[in-house]
Amino acid sequence: MQFRLYKVSGYEEAILSLRMSKGKFYSWEKAKEIQELVYVMTDNQGRINKHDQYAIKLNLVDSYDNPKITGNYVKDLQEFERLLGLTFNNAMGEFKHHTLMKYIDVAFFTEGLHRGAQDDLDAHAIAFNNRITRFSTRLAEISDTQLSEWYQDKAIPFFEAFKLINQQRIIQGKEEVKLPNGIEIDGNLFTKTPFGYVLEKYAQVPAKNGLAKDVQRGLMPLGLSSNAIWKTDLFNLRYVYKMRSKLTKANPELKLGMEQLADQIEEAIPVFGQYFRKELTDSGSWEHMNKVKTVTSEEFQEYKKLKQAHELRLTYDLPENL
Image 1 (cartoon, rainbow, N blue to C red):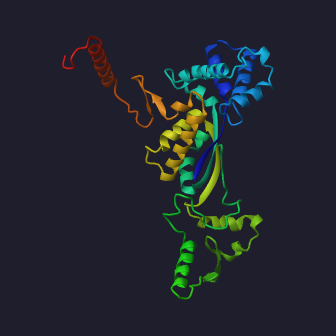
Image 2: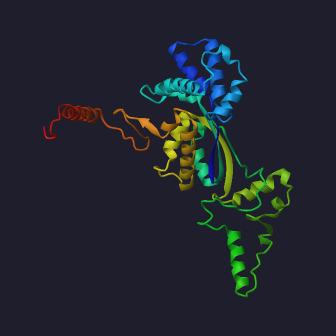
Image 3: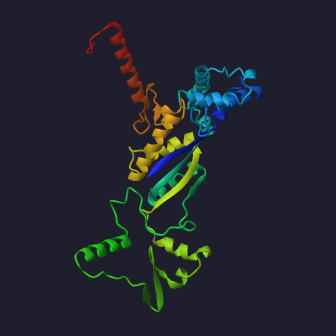
């Protein structure tokens, strides 16, 4: 099972949204300058370009008329991070104008995630704005009950168990036990499929019709391995992470996947990435979002008094009991 970060986009829109909201430093020309800066500094996945990639892209833009692009990799990277930093401080820092984060889109794949964990992730479909496309149990060619990696050593589907039983019987010199190809109940014949027995008339329907698969998928276990592509914005993805991180009571495989994704975001997204798992507290420190607790105004005022007293002792080197 893997969560794969596929693409990050919208850096320039996030930067420009701050300028637009402040009513400062915006013009069509400046917007194009920032667009070109983001182009030369990032690759097709939204990750920071290496120096050689930067040099190739630099030759593809008219950087001489762009004051944001100096031709010096280090300086241009610093300028890109400075502009993102201004947006970051307003979006996630002291001001928390989270709308600015919604301009940064994140697309990722889940590969080999079991259907039950997909359901847990689907619970936040509104956060993905319905940008979810799953491996279809109706349209895809699924020939057996392949469980996700997390389930493979924890559960055995019925037909797999039956194969194992017969293997053991052969080793023991015993005759194989045969399952019937059909089961008749009240005059209705149910035909054997890789997932169980289905009414014969559905098993005989051509695959392109869909009915046979519609019936068969009712027998597929929630542990079935499946793939999907997801897309959301950075603000909503942080919310989904908060609800499904390793510090929550979410499905175990989903928690592993969300931590995989968070690791990739921290590495890939400049400025914002290193704080993806964190929130800025009223005390001024960054803490893991699942460890931040709310307090009453009275408790916070008491905290400030204790903090001021502590700072006073440090300033004048006073003992703690004063």
